[in-house]
Figure 1 (cartoon, rainbow, N blue to C red):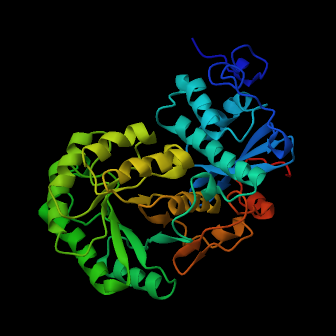
Figure 2: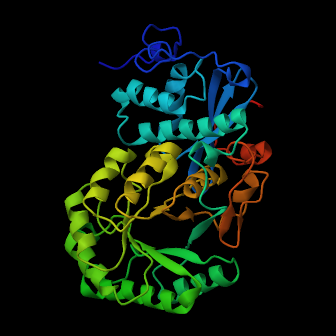
Figure 3: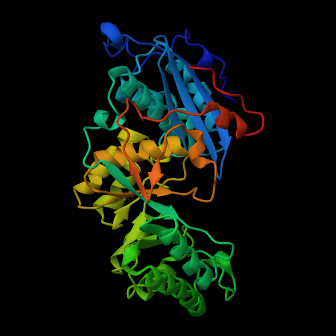
Length: 412
């Protein structure tokens, strides 16, 4: 029997404000002054970038609007629409309570992982932007202040011939010399021409040697001018991942990312502990509960949560704090628009163990046109000091690049 979602959209339905609602928790919305604010609407618009970015806007009766972003995924806008009744009439300053309220109300949709968490993440980012504007403080201040004034950005690089070591090497040098980045990443799950059966996840020796050639040429060409990481996208078996990581130990690898599928933490731990090559994982594990075993069992060297995907800004802060108890640094995975990228940078600024934030759109000419502010310069993003996230959407650019069939946000 299917679920009738019509009641979920009714803010007056008997159960929509129970559990972690303001009334049942004894919370009063009357804060006095500018803090007495209520959410009136939540809207989404999808942008056709190098990924389908889902932008989220939360409107209030004070005329203040917060903007956030959820990681791309089928069904995310529809899930956010279903959550709207659980937010309308609520005070947006209660970020933690609203976050847990949504997790509980959407438990039937699987709110411990997957696109439901991602949808909640987009709302949570918008709440930080909104709360910062209401309180007139930058978003990092809501997370405890900042350790740094700018975030290092690492550039995810691509070439038309990704399996060609020479092409990768030339692109690495171009990105360092012409674009000014001192941190890069390349893919290693590329065809070598030596494969017999890619479905079995096994790497033959010629395949490992091909990947080692890419790593050798790129790291030697850029030398000390840049750190270079390499991504495997959960492609290899445990044994093959161990052999590959061991083969790369002689090179200056910043990290080897996601060498094995993400489901089995035991195999991940074995791979990490078998090699001196730094291993990074985390973008496909949700919330602090999902990351806990990876951290506690020292199954990684660097953790890489994707903030608009795995739980939002405060949840990523909690993941970073848990990682810090094991002296594990954080390098945030990120394929977002400027909105999600800046939100990740705010989190990165607020945690001591932050290494860098990923940038995945250097080939997309209009990426930074989506906001009015200048963002990345010479591989670094200066943390905005304006209230909230500190970025302003250019709605003309948003409208120009919307996914077919999407509608533009209402004006603020």
